Length: 187
Image (cartoon, rainbow, N blue to C red; front, side):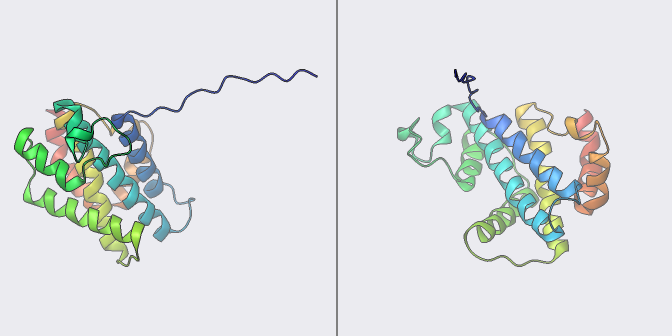
């Protein structure tokens, strides 16, 4: 009996597509009520949106110089070395990338990092409202940052069906920020 082995395809995600996939996961968790409990969906949406944002920041650094993605630029491109933290990425983008972050964005990103760290490394407690605000800010930031700094539309695929409407209904903070930025994104 002859066994035929199909060639396995490589799994590849560049920074931008990796970020897009994490955003898609966060959105699906919020918009799809059939996946786990509401609390678990919010928890995982926070970690997925934090991952998305971290990768978007690193993609923006990569476009300046790929070595800037690494904490210690001399270690580029070793995958055994640490990549830049979110704090380092923000600092570098502000100082060498001429990227501006509003005070509100910086507060939201810090809250997101603190929450993600609690979820991934210890214990996490929050009200549903707090969790929804964190996710709403994160999704809004990711979409606007990708548009403004990477010339990339992260929201397009969610507008082709009812997912976008579900997001707007589920996350008040996201709906408010989307309304504020909607004119900005069209321009």
